Picture 1 (spheres, rainbow, N blue to C red):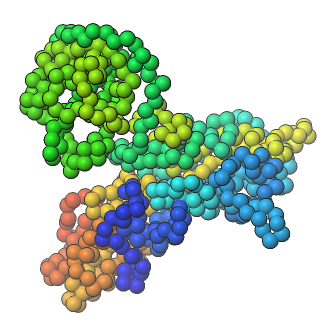
Picture 2 (cartoon, rainbow, N blue to C red; picture 1 turned 30 degrees about the horizontal axis):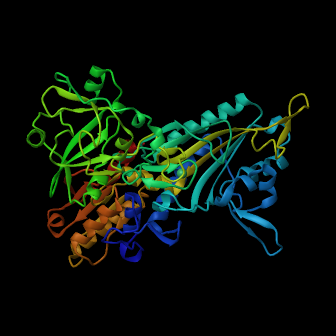
Picture 3 (cartoon, rainbow, N blue to C red; picture 1 turned 30 degrees about the vertical axis):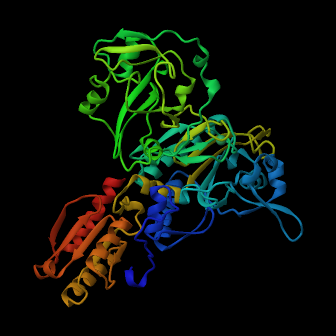
Length: 573
Ligand SMILES: [Zn+2]
């Protein structure tokens, strides 16, 4: 592809509406554009990535015995009433009436339609097992679509359905799909884990979810299992629940100094004093660009520095070094406490519910027991200061929170759909039996976004080669130099002849712009031809994920590049 004849509308600035890195980069690199809330157009390079993920899915599904079909997006209400989900599904199901006043919906999933097909077409054990799949648009009317294609209303999904004669067969089909999914995500270059999951509105007896792991926790998403609450982990509010702690109703005991020789960490102090971390308050000294503050937090909690920074309206927040800690508390690290402390004290909301807790003594080898707020020290401000964690409840509805980026979900359904829809078969003895089902989904565009979440730097995306929009970018730097242009054109043609997916940056723009865009687009291999290198009979080759640049002879360049592309595939799969 020639860049000048293609369509890659990039942004220089990070779009403000995008909260997570994949959304920011997909907008900036010209992969997607929003049409309306939770509904996106895939621009050419976004579509290329999506198609590559789809092809990997197809190859692996077909290899595992999957049979591709394509089902409609508009479903008649009758079918959903038959399964019982018309009433159960709630507002996420987009319902409407056609010109004949027939109720219908835009499909969020296809269990009903595939089961209807099977009950009409499959009647004998001889036709089973069977495994159907499709790659198609789905619609779920989310209250709060967010994070770009990570949580949107209209999305591309691969959904698959297995039909077996008995539980043993269904277990086998499930296991085959679980392994197939692992291969698919491996080939997409994703790091993931498989965890047991809630079956939600799909239902069934057992399900597992494929979740992507972010390099850092910062981009993790917290979602509510009951309502539509979803937040970036850094921003997720912690709901402080007064009835969760009963210790606040304890009568206050006198403050007491205890010797804690060399006991500095929460673990050391709590085991030494035989208490739980919930009975201890950590005092952490932070230095901002303007002041020194103490953050008080329960022993089993962690300070969320982003929340602290926002609360203090500071430009930067960092933990104090041992020197500053000693200066502020009069004690070495590990013994800081609020009693007698002279700096501003901010306490996490959880402290409101605590009484008679353990704190540092601001003296070496000393802690206090039975410390209490107001009596022993004054908190300047209570606030939500901590990192949300598993076990915390939804700040909106108290529902259970989930921490993840789900990209695939496998369910054992049993007879949840086949029974109400009467999908039955005749066994060897001519007896009628209900078919046992499994259902399996992959968010296709979500997989692309997840790959970006895991593979990027400050300059842009670093695509795993199997799903990169282009495998190679060729950058001729001086278009007024005919030797440079001729050499670039030759390499470009030779790579195309070898079926390499290559983008020739033939735009008449500054070299800096070409480098910036190549980095932003995350093309795995960058080939640069400049006046200087071409004169020496060479060109520059650089792998996006590596720092080093090497020079290779022009004459044999195509063969070297093709080999390098193969190597990148080898390390990705
Ligand atoms: Zn909730």
